[in-house]
Image 1 (cartoon, rainbow, N blue to C red):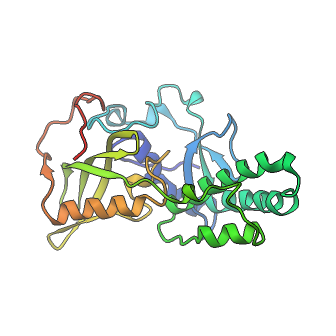
Image 2 (image 1 turned 90 degrees about the vertical axis):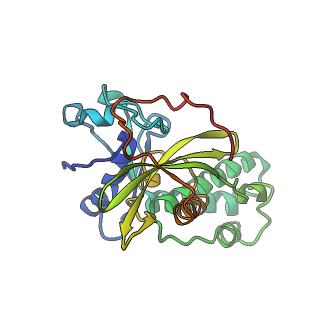
Length: 268
């Protein structure tokens, strides 16, 4: 199955293809995410993405905006190892493994390490659902209570893991502009991690609306933010647009690629 896609970076182009792939590979309820192969092999509910380097436009091979590059240029497609996977099926499978471990093995200390591993896998699976399905609503606390059959789950899943770091947003720039949309570049600090990311905003009736749908640039391959963090990032970008705290650089010539580390990044 061939799917054409485009985007300002290779990773975002992959993300822009996911809604179409979801419809063509699954059914109306299928939601696909994209990530590197886990432990060198694809997920049971995953599909390997075969990238044809001859069909990749030169623009995707240039880091024009100095943004985060989670995937290299596809010069050697045999070593990319990218999969699209059904986030709900994957979460359901991990949920079943955690339920079995938490209810049938919890009284044997030899399995406590496994239960902790399953709980962390479940947390990541829930985050993936929240990233790739903007309509998802998941009660993590309620689910843990049910999965552990009402028993204390805190020795296996620290409540601190339910507190998610606040992402700080710094300089916001408009780097591309058309009549219908703009492309934003923004600096971010996520704990010890900092860099630049890109996001779209749609233009309507003289106002820019940060794109939160499945076609959001931040719902791309190997996303920078967790599913719990993403709504607040979108809110911060919208506030920057609404209050004028951004710079219009859309007339800049971005033909030459930039390094994400060329400029010093300091918290706002």
